[in-house]
Amino acid sequence: MNERFVKHATFVVERTYAASPERVYQAWADPIAKAKWFSKPDIFDFQVGGREYSSDGPPEGPIFIFNASYQELVPEQRIVYTYTLDSGGTRISVSITTVELIKVKGGTKLIFTEQGAYFDGHDTPEVREHGTNFMLDALGKIFEGEV
Image 1 (cartoon, rainbow, N blue to C red):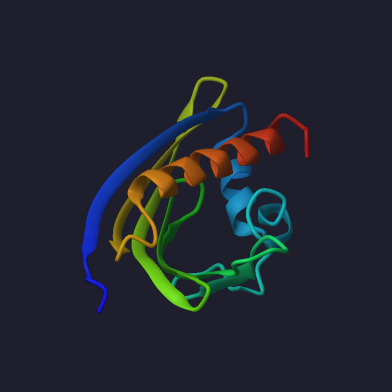
Image 2 (cartoon, rainbow, N blue to C red):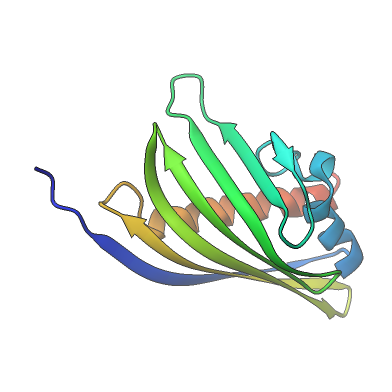
């Protein structure tokens, strides 16, 4: 029998974008805009209590299932959601994420905080933080006009 364990961790990633808080918020709130820097959602209901669901992965596998529920939305200021991440039919983590948007001179400071429970070594906070950095870099390319 495999040993079961949970690793708890919090990480914070910050970015400053040359875009208004309204524009950054819209990149999260619009499914077409979000699909340019995140996975294309199968379900997208951007409202408190709403759900976002996507099933995606490389052709060689595995398939990752992102299943989120929006907990709080303050337009142009804050997005809070909880989500599970499954890989190949195995639950690998459960997280709460807070995205803060702060107006700064010339744009928006985004503070992304994730508190997670990572299960049985299938995922780690380090791998998740690396993926989050990649994701937020992709979001930044939207504002630079590269996507």
